[in-house]
Image 1 (cartoon, rainbow, N blue to C red):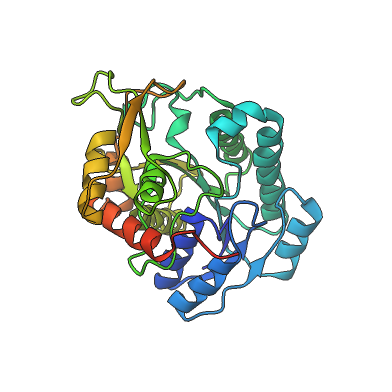
Image 2: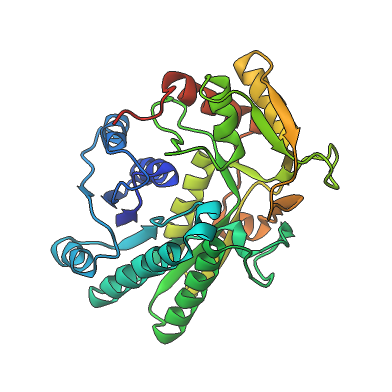
Length: 337
């Protein structure tokens, strides 16, 4: 298939581009580079040995989106593009609703006008709200912040579209905590500001960009008191997107929902210790108060994806840390401008 990857220069998008090419698909990228560096494209081309067409514009631009579909042959779409910082979404809710919903409206309208009927949507465990332990796909969805609500709303919009247009084949992928990097160390996670997530923050402490890790609370009802999360290597996550895309080509279901996760929880301190092992030294940290909105435990029940997609996670937490450290140590300041 010729697959349009929106947000294809971003962290998860770039690894999914590699997985798609490895699986024999053609790829076209659209990205406005608001949260990604153009230099990632050259690295993707070096890794794949292929030219990757890139269109640099914002998907909320209806005319440019329409022009792309009118001038290229696209068989399917994987939709990553969107704002994604939880804290920022609380400060700028209108920006998040306008961008995340608007890009989906623009994209799906263009798909329908040009008879593109396969869409893989990047959703999130945030749609389970505070009920994230052992989450199964039939659990009711809700959210605790505007970013999460944009995911809940987009999922509902896509369900309604699937009812109205039964020729559509849509996958909603709810994933938990993507970490890791390509084993080459040439592409990885490059937060544009202070990292919101644990692994890139630890990596920046390890490389000297941050003084120490702050552990938000050690009094949760968990084995060591720190928050427990389901970490998934970004390469396993990318493989899940390819599996979902290929399932859409053969399924009779207009819409399908799958959790992508390991089904196992790792605490903050366990992840820190695993990263210290990868680095070969202890890293400084301090325990501070809980962060508003954090839940004690979050992990997926991935059994539906395991059974229906023939997919499961392959990489260990140790591999996630080793690959992240390889990326961060080779690129201490992230991608060059």
